Length: 160
Image (cartoon, rainbow, N blue to C red):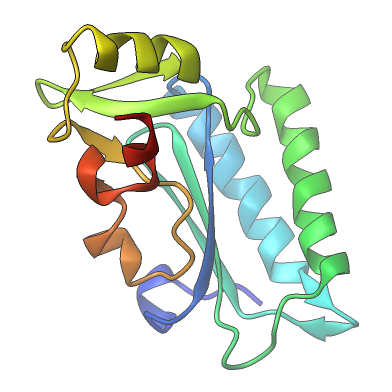
């Protein structure tokens, strides 16, 4: 069952998938419709999930479930993963590359493979105050507080 993101509790569980490139307006429109259809019919053990989604900064797909109503199950998470794999094929984009790190440079979002990101850290071109996207957050409320943070406040700090 689809709900607008604002209608879901701040305690809702989230998953963030990062596209390996910016999505065009047409791709986002297509993805919005496909996601709306998917989430409207999304279930866990034949019980409707109260879910939502957002596409942020033309590349981050945030999928949400209000688990106060119904919890996600392994099968429902698998359904979402399989849906996203189909979207990847249709849009020729990769949402699953966890070794591609996003950060801000002069208010522009940049993405690099982890190894190149580490090289820039070692060279001093990035530092502990560089803003990164912490896609490992798990709650909707964290989108405001822990998603875009300095490296020193993220899991990325292990690379310092």
